[in-house]
Image (tube, rainbow, N blue to C red; front, side, top):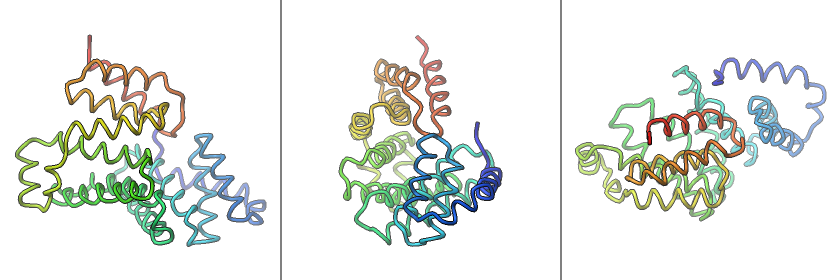
Length: 259
C-alpha cells in the first residue's frame, strides 16, 4: 500500500530510537551496507534510516547521496498527498545534484536527478513542463554518457520519447516552436521501443521495464507484443518496493486490451 512521507519518517524515527546505540558506532560503509540489505528486502523506510544516518555522518558521500535520493523517490512515488510528494521530490533532486557535484562522471546521480525532475514536472504548469521535459532528457543522456548500458537511464529516455509522442500534434508543435523544445521533433516510437527493449534486455525481470515497454508497444499499435509484456510483468519476481503497484497497472492494462 502507498505510504505517506509523514508516516514514513515517523517510522524511520522509531527505527532510529530502537537502533540508536548500535548505529552510533557504525561507519558510513556499515550504514550503507545495512541500508542496502533493507532495500534489497524491499523495506525502503528502514533503508532510508541507514542512508540518512550515513549522510549525516558524511554529507558529501556520493553513495549516501544517491541512495538517499533514490529511496525518497521510491517511497514517495505513490504517496497520495500532493504536498508531501512535491517536497520529497524536491529534496531528492537536491540530493541527486549534490551526488553529481561529488562524482560528475558516475551515472547514478544523473539518473536519480532525471527521476526526481520527471516527478516534479507533474506539479507545474504546462509551460514549465516543457523545460522539465528537456531537463529530464538531458540528465538521462548525462547518465548514459557515464554508463551507456545504464538500464534506469535507458528506461527514462525511452519513456521520454513515448511521452512526447503521446502529446497531441498541436501541443507538440507549440512546445517545439514556441517553448524552446525543438528537440521534441526527435521523439519517435521507434526510439522509445529500442531504448525500453534494451533496458528490459539488461534487466529482464524488472516489472517496471516490462510495464513501460508494454505501454509503448500498445500505443505504437503492437497489441500482441504489449500483451506479452504485461503478462510477463505479472509473472516477474518482486524486486522494487513498488512492484505491487506496477503489477496492478499491468493487470489493468491487460483488462483494457481485451481479447
